[in-house]
Amino acid sequence: MSEHLLLALDASSSACSVALWRGDASGRGELFQRYEIAPRQHTQKLLPMVDAVLGEAGVALSSIDALAYGHGPGSFTGIRIAAGVAQGLAFGAGRALLGVSTLEALALDAYLRHGTELVLAALDARMGELYTGAFRIEREAGWIQAVGLDGEQVIEPSALRLPAAVPGDFFGAGAGFGHLESFDAGVRARITRFEATLEPDARAIALIAARGYFLGLARPPAEVQPVYLRNEVASRSQRGPLD
Image (cartoon, rainbow, N blue to C red):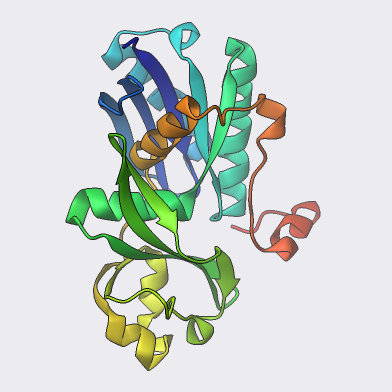
């Protein structure tokens, strides 16, 4: 099988990360990555990280088959930065682009780190709310994917519910679990473990996007827009950054 290259980046949280996936349609591949907790430094960090992973892999941007970024939800400012950088690189290289859910990436990263197959991903949405999504890890034709069990949503912690039709306990991933004491007792009973320090990671975004690339999901850069979930956040861009 022929080798393909996909470059992914994320700036949707306090973390800043870039990953390069090199592999084939079977799902086999290798990753080159840079990851750093760098609040409010995404603009300064992203492009040097891109140069670093390309240099480590020994490839040029012109060799990349497609690019991807964490399209949200998350920090409004960070998502805008990632979108701008990813679209700019894709336009410049004449390549297509994929947007990847940061909640889906968080769920896949939780599996890669802990081997847990049911994941509740939760990010702090501020204003007393969370961005959440429940996922099940599945394997198909050599690929690992995080399949959504319900829609991604912005919700108050006390109103959060897990899918009743899906039995089993969930692993909690993301900064939203800093509000665990506000969760409904029934939800807390099904969260057997959690890691509130997990942030969306370009490594997982690259793996998700690589599968999407082979499924033909890459699009012209201008068509791949951020997903904020909260409409009010997007409208505030006219008044100033959220964070």
